[in-house]
Image (tube, rainbow, N blue to C red; front, side, top):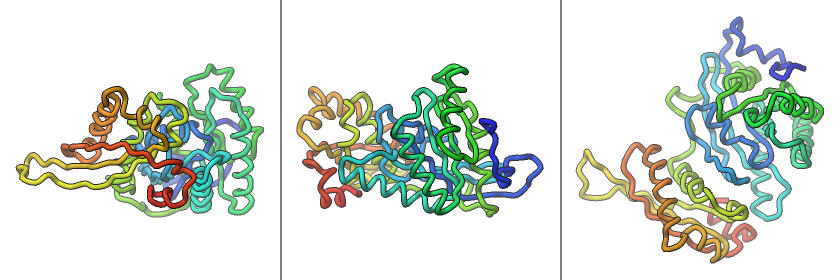
Length: 320
């Protein structure tokens, strides 16, 4: 099978000879840090999912909407499938499995710069079960192709081909934009004929509250130790317009709590003399203002919720 060719007859949606408009849902799965969020943002052409060099940064299914001339691809970004060690991990895996049952096509992301390993085999086995139950087409997407030479990329494509039965295999680099259009075309080809499901100007159906929490969490994750991403939760407590402001200069007060599991993690987030928390606030505020299109006063607080990943009551309170 050619690395970029789809084998289903419905994959001709991207061909010039087919004028059928298609719309539907695609789910990107892969082990943590496989490039799913970066690819989602590249396909949509705007930031709708947080990205980080740290694994397991995605906690919600962010829908990004990619509008194409002959189709509308609605991307569902999910947490990385993994062998869970906590109640939170189990719930994140359950979230992925529920999502997989309700999409038209699955994109299985495997990074080109990391050899196929047990984590990929675990996900491939899960997808094989899905294919048997739902016959959902699965496209293998070899991400981060810019990080390897042609020989290593070819070796990875062969290894991925041997991992399972894929409707197509597509290498791409989301950061460089290489073959991102090809990924969109192949995924769109497996969608059902349908009118457009969302207006052209809608990029995501996530609420502003969810997006603000994600932007704060992304800023807080930059440059921290490996264990912190698993222990970090963000809750937007309130969003209130500042009173007595002129109509042409509105200001929104946004109060956000950042929860960690231990006092030592709280110290990491705050930094010496509060220096790191100020950096987090500045970075997050810029993203929030771009999202909302207005000035924001961001009030950040860091709190300890001991062992919240293993506590059902605290998980519910934090939105899991």
